[in-house]
Image 1 (cartoon, rainbow, N blue to C red):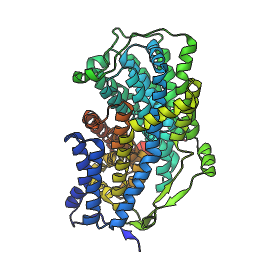
Image 2: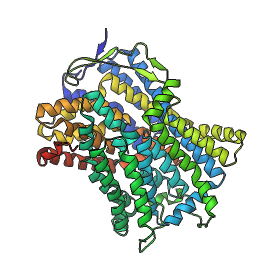
Image 3: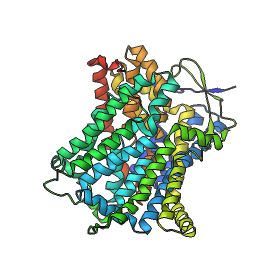
Image 4: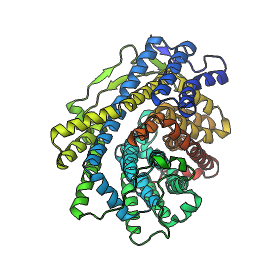
Length: 553
């Protein structure tokens, strides 16, 4: 017999919600305020989740343990696999000096640190979000920024802030496509709706990013470049999402944005070049910034060779993101392992779903089609072209694994925590608390998406978790279902910067180990403020601009 989830075990939604929040609070407080190491804070949150799931919510202990095991496996592949291999590529380029040439070539486009952030953290990161998602953009951009001399706080925190507006269409539209397939939305309708919410933030986030780094005055000094960056991303994002579909939204918008900004910087220069590599107000971190060496002009061939590994990375990541390539690779090797004692033995019940629905618990060992494998191949090919011999490559890989070992453990523990909360129904209890807000639901329903990504680390997972609840609640309140389904995804993107796995990815990419709490404290305000702004926009769309439900075809 399946075990049915219980969403109000205490007979009081207030008490049940407070209990359900304890694991997340334990982890975040431990990480952000008690200055615990990330893997210790994650372990404390996991233990709290297991205890509350079993004792308060009645989940069988064996099921809770198996859910944690499934989450840990998922943390290692695909998430940890991406982190390990992107750091491996970065180590190869640093050891042979090509990253210094790359740094000089970017400085040749602009020496202004604010403009480098726009080009790399926002536009270049959006390409990797669109092609791969799942932590890839933060890993790539944070590693590049730290190599360019940015302080670890700037490289990690600003990469997280920049990686917001593209997230809903990440990994070739996976979050939107999954939302539609799992919960019965029309994929074009929900893609169009998200495309009428996020472009506002695609325009806003570049301004927000530079304000967070350089302050209001520093932002105003380069407002033309910021406007060009935002508009050249937002307009294609709107057009592609509304007229073509969700798959290539980010890839096209990012490419247009990068090219447009690079061309604009050939005819426009800021009056004052910004050389600081530390966020305004955080000068205490200046001592952790890398030394900014004088720029050298390199031969064109050397520059092309320095960019070669990163071009290979973009090509491999894009190919690995194509559904046809994934299907072909999975056809070669992609065994599925149902978790005995968990698979199909947990039942979601109304009001979360229209009728009792059993949850699958299958670990897909998609090693060949995993994005991290594409990154690994790019690194290996790049390493050989950089004149490394196989023994040297193997040694660098071993050193890289040792470097990120605690980060991999942390990611596994974080995903274990998230999976326990999902299968026990703790996260659903938190979601129901948002769903009980009546006329304010458009605002709080958006924050439900934010919560889902903050808990799971994935806009796709948040859409799977809360997409059905959004549809049911919207229909009960007389709101457009597509509006609230889209709001779940659009609000969720702002939770991406505070989800634990993204923070660990950022700290690992920058080599700023055991500083995850500082990163969390830096980005938390930005996350909740931007999520609230998305909620306000959705509320206006619900009650003031109902024409947004129309679908352009």
